[in-house]
Length: 162
Ligand code: THU
Image (cartoon, rainbow, N blue to C red):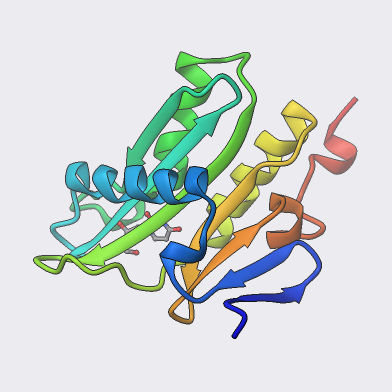
């Protein structure tokens, strides 16, 4: 029985983590580790992200909340902005995002919010090469070949540019 399912171009689903390639599995493991630094006393939803840069550098991030709710920052953007500020010229190859509830070890479905997709999209455009994204959806592991699959027609500055 096949464990791999192609839902649409650029988006592949896997039934279990074991079905992922070794590099992706490792990145999911690093994203899970990153949830340990999550500060989520309000939502109690602990999110971790891990970026793999082209030279093998790993950049973790986790969600950071605030009593003033709109100031909460998602794990994806924490990781992306950390990469941009610490490794400004390094290409991001792949990103994994995972989440679990407070005091629960098992990972739950968590797909990136629209704001994070917009930010991811500009990172991809800036570097001129695709960023693969791994997330859990519908109790399956999804590997997305590019952010452009997750956010078609994202805002690119349009007529603001130039
Ligand atoms: N969260 C993320 O870290 N990433 C997302 O893509 C969606 C949501 C965080 C924000 C907040 O701390 C908690 O999850 C509940 O929304």
